[in-house]
Length: 224
Image (tube, rainbow, N blue to C red; front, side, top):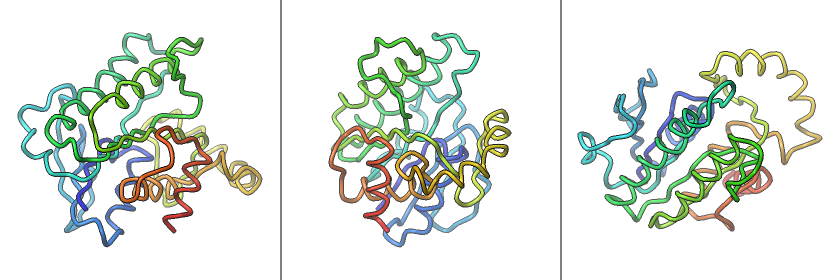
């Protein structure tokens, strides 16, 4: 199995990369992002690509993959809708359209978020944009496409957010979140669970195209 990962330096992307490198069925992992992961592994190849809206110059290197885990994402805090749309919808759909054209037989998994608005008409700006992004991805001619909507996320193996404010908030809340996780197992997922669920969906499919936290947990349980 050959896996392509966008956003492998983010919190969820780090875990997706970790689980792929540990999985004996994954023979090759290619990461694409503005910065390298800094990791070394015989199965790992990396492309540092600064223009995430255009892929003509690296297109040949993106073909022939069985799955894509798209983990790129930014916070909408303090951001105008046009800017957030550019960094969320435009970047995601640009990559997905390229992949759907050159490797339509792949499975595409997009990490969205709990509360995403599929109607694209709700009050929350970020939820509308995420919903628009999901809808666009689900219309593309991939073999399969799954939208992952985790709620709370706990780092299982030292993964860190690239957003400083998020990481500070997470560091402060981590003791409480760990106490709450046994009480709310469907809403507080570990990064490992999300990575395992991605691999399960890529290999064996999933029961629905939009997966909420409880669905992701069940997929992870099936994988383990």
